Amino acid sequence: MPATKITSPDHPALAELCQALADHAQEVDRTGNWPAQQLQLCAEYGVFEWFLDPAWGGQAWDQESVVRGYLALSGACLTTTFIITQYTGACRRIANSENQDLKERLLPDLAQGKLFATVGISHLTTSRRHLSTPVLRAERKEGGFLLDGFSPWVTGAAYADSVMIGATLMDGDQATDEQLLVALPTNLSGVSAPEPAQLVGVSASATGELRLDQVFVEDQWLLAGPTENIMSKGASSPGGYETSTLALGLADAAINFLATEAAKRADLGAPLAALRQEHDDVSKTLFAVVHGTPDCSTETLRQQANSLALRSAQAALAAAKGTGYVLGHPAGRWCREALFFLVWSCPQPVLSANLCELAGITE
Image 1 (cartoon, rainbow, N blue to C red):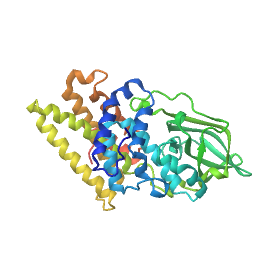
Image 2 (image 1 turned 180 degrees about the vertical axis):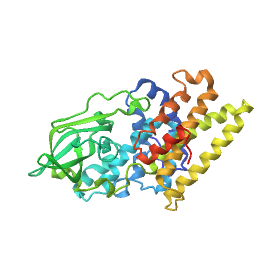
Image 3 (image 1 turned 90 degrees about the vertical axis):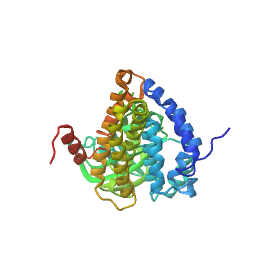
Image 4 (image 1 turned 60 degrees about the horizontal axis):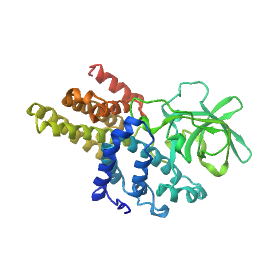
């Protein structure tokens, strides 16, 4: 029987989907296998339609609804939800492109989950930027660009049909200030995805290098550029409230576990109440940011969400006692997954604030 399409964050089928994802989250974590079944289930429930315009077969959810959907999904299975953020990041860049032919070619199938797209942009934002030579370089050629190098962190690179990838334009041996974005078909000659490293958490996301060995990409695949600071143009930038949303979803799952344990143990009541109140407060801050009426920066929100995810996961582990420290228990998985937010698109101000908190430094 076909799954019911989820048309709002209040739709009862969302809880049904989340339960199905949660039932398999431990298996995904244990095996490290790409969650193809979970992603297919999301496609059947219409999750990929949330982010795209009806012109492309989407539902065009507003930002509050998307955040509420992400909160539910990330509390069920962070790995699957993280993969979806990379998928939708690629979709947004394609949808915001002026390349109409490319949008018509890709977006309808992306909305239905018939194609898988992901992003390779960390080297333009937070990773490997200290190097004197860009790790992924583009040279202008007649009819397109020649790309050479690698993108260090690409989620699902080996499973992608298309990668929204960025490169720095070169002038001979010298890097220019201009960058470009292309919707890279992964079947082009010279594109390869080595076996990704085993991560502490979300390892099943198959996040690792994508290598480009003198890959010629025709102009028809160009999304934007060449231009300076390309990641600041046309779509939300990395390090925004999306990552905070997933951290809060993880924290909520851990707090809900603590609530279950607190029903049997009175000593957990005070910690549970404090964490739940903090979650409510940070969630209000998140939605204020979403609505454009923030009382703090996205960096402060991210620091608060990171901190809450780390502490809530550890509280769940402490409540589970020795059982939680055995592989296969969700509390141990949440602790490892919470560490992910210290490194995923983590701007330097957020990292510094988290380090100060861990070191007990207060201003």
